[in-house]
Amino acid sequence: MKMKRIALVAMACLVSAGTLWAAGQNEKLTQGIPHIVIATADNTYGLSTDSDLQGAITSLIESKTNTKITTIIPPLASYTDKLATLVNSGDVPDVFVVAQAMTKIPSMVARGQLLDLTDYIKNSPALSKLDPSLFQNLQIDGKTYFIPYNYPKSKALYLRKDIMDQYGITLSNTPTTEEFSREMQKLAGTGIIPFCFPKWVDNFQFFYNSFGAWGGVYNENGQIIDGFQTQEMRDALSYVHQLYVDGVLSQEFITTENSAMREKTYTGKAASDIDYVTNYINYVQNTTAAGKYTEMHLIYKLVGPNGDGGALNEATQTAWVVSAKTENPEASIRVLETIVTDSEVYPAFFGIGVEGKHYTLDANGVITPTAKAANSGYKYTLNYLSDSFLDIDLNNLSFTLSDLLKQGLPKQIAHIRAVQPNLGPNHAADINVGVSVAYDRVAPSIKSTRESIATKIIVGSVSLEQGMQEYNNFWKSINGPEILKELNAAN
Image 1 (tube, rainbow, N blue to C red):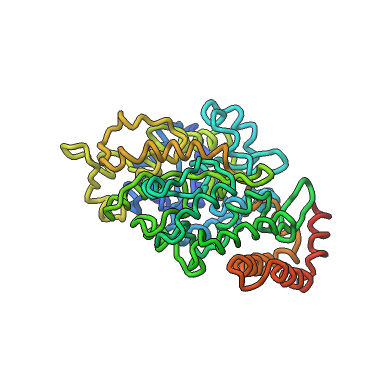
Image 2 (image 1 turned 120 degrees about the vertical axis):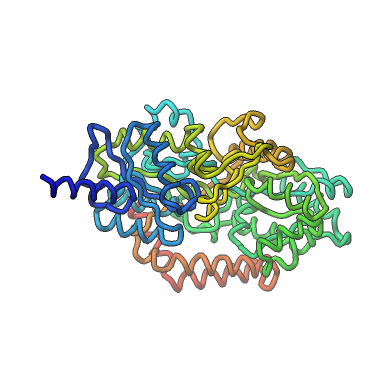
């Protein structure tokens, strides 16, 4: 009996430290309370690597959900590999985070690894209130297998309002492609770059959207096609090429890093660029720091000749899922519902941690990390004030916002909400990994070749016809027509 007690004490200590995975799997109930295993990277979970501080987050969730929770919180850099090991070994956590969700979730669903959450979401008082559009890009056969925890990543065009006013540039949040070209040409000869762009060619999808084009192989009305070889793509590339010829598009975009692009806009050397809608506050802070503060005007989409258009939609990049093997699905959903929608848990989990543990408030209400938090790499973030689904009163926070945050956050929130109905398509989940071995093998080269040729067409080193012929030759060399047949046969 004595030996048994010793063993139980040792087991409890290990579980509380989150290191005894096998015990967590075997002990499904603790005194009648559901036992849930959560896996996520350490860039959330209170933004601290200290086990005691992570434990404070766990205790908060447990108190809200009437569950016993065991955590698996590896470093962000090793999280994906750790999760793959757990999933492949069969020791799957009940609840876990999936990165690169648009491609990985469909594959996991095909392998029967994820729980269908459709009815659970419908019956959840909190989750059922989320905007249905949040789930649209990643539904599989009309079913939902994930829960997002913030708004989808999207990009829009940022325009400096001071330069717009100085040069009489008049553009709405949704102008036409013709209006954008005409108005931005007013900056010709001024020494200001009209539109700064980074070297990441996939950002041109913003303009492809205006012509109903998609840069990749995708499902078009039930048929898998190669979007790069459509007339819509030809029209889109012709338009972007003309922006380059007219001097609207930065002539050095091929070598421009994101940081350099932003710096030019912060300092007024460029009138505009393309960036995440969630970065609005960064423009407030950095234009101020550069002594060049201005309000930023956002263009959510350019409306093309046929009425097409939409913001660059990166959709759900990271999401929560539930294992198909969980023995406590209701409790798992209760935990996720709390993490994603609870007004106390969400800020603690994704933003600032637990007061008194991760931080204290000074006499002016400013957040100050505790010594333990500071020593564990904790660095709080206030992104949740705008990116989360919470309805937050910025005038009734427990802590004080800086003047810049007071100035910029309401506008960032407004833009995040306003861009949602103006999002373009995202077809990243149209083709699951494993459907076609031939396609999986050549998909990376399709992407790199497509982007290389698009760049050459835009800068004019080859004509549109020459570029399309070059791509067609490549397409034949990889047996593209046969690959499409194979994909459609499995569709």
